[in-house]
Each structure stands twice: as C-alpha cells, then as structure tokens.
Length: 238
Ligand code: CA
Image 1 (cartoon, rainbow, N blue to C red):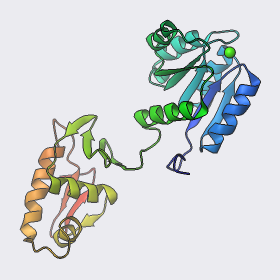
Image 2: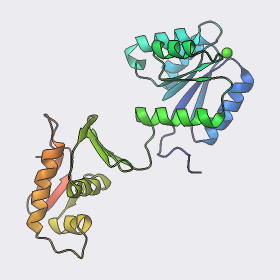
Image 3: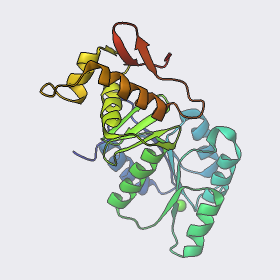
Image 4: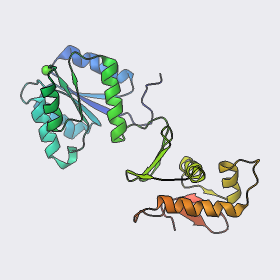
C-alpha cells in the first residue's frame, strides 16, 4: 500500500472523541495505515493521555464533555512540552468562523464533520511530515541537514542551502552512507560515474565547495577529512 507510513517507529495518534462508533471507525482506519492509536473520551482524559502516551498528533473533537476541544487545545499550547504538538481540530460545524477560531487557539489544521476518511488521513500524513514524525519517501537527513529528493532541496536547521549539482550529488551520497569514510576514487565512482575520467584532486575542490555551502553561520563542520584515506559525513568534522 503506497500510503503506508514509512519508517520503523509507528507514529501515535491520540483520538479525542466522545462518539464511540466514530472512535471505532477511526481506530480501524488509522491502524490499517500503520499508526498506533490511543483514545480519550473527554477533554480531561485527553490532557492525561497526552502526558502519558506522548502522541505524535492529536485528533481533537471540538464538542466534548468535561472540557471542550478548544480549551484542551489552549491548555496544550500553554505548556512548553506540548506547545508544538500537532493538533487537528474536528468540528461539527461548517462555519468559517469556527475554523478561524480553531486555528487561532493553536490548532494546526481542522476538518469538519462529516469528513471523508481519505481526506482526514491525507491531512494527518501532511501534518506528520511537516512535524518530522514521518519521512517523505525521498527525504534523507543527517543531524540538522535535510535533503528533499523530490523537490531537490537541501536545508540546514530549516534554512535553504544552495548547492551546485556536483555538490548536491556528493551530499546525497554521503547522506546515504553517514559515518563511512570514502576514498577520492570511491567518491569519483559514486558521483561522476566509473566511465568519466576526472582527476582525484577535483574531489577536493568539490568537497571544499560542499563544506562552504553547508557549514553556514556557525553550524558545525560535518565533513570529516581522514588523512590519506578520504572523506566522511561525520558530526566530528574538522
Ligand atoms: Ca463530540
């Protein structure tokens, strides 16, 4: 199934909902997509479950007994530990005003009942990708460096890096093999290809450019030079 969640750890979704049949339906669909599901039937329980289960995302019904979804959202946003916890608010109403209110309170997204399951799942996945809980198919990362292979974009600590095509391919190869030391010849084969004749010293030039491009503004050097052996992507840099 192409939409299955990639990666080893299953992201946990806390479903806060007081309608039992809807919880059953959500659990079935979320588990089928590879998520772990926790549940809470009212607002007070939701706050407890968040603290205990440490979910990756909360699907939060607006109309709840004990404490409304809006109030739960407000309280979660007030605490440092849950300030950035992804929250999708589920409203029973369709007025735009409610959507605005949900977002103002700190929800990351909202969906109105009745919703199509596909649409909800797409929103959950999009939000989990943005928060980094699930990786996109073409994403490589090392420490604070992220390469989006689909969009051909590289960021460090969230800021865009500008790499030439050779530096891009070199970084891609390093990201696929973090910590491993490669000789200049191995890098030539991997980046330029076996059939192209390039002076081994050319590798040094591109390593220098790559370093310059990724070691911006005080970021630690992540390219390690191993004397008479080669280079590695390694947080202990130079
Ligand atoms: Ca409800």
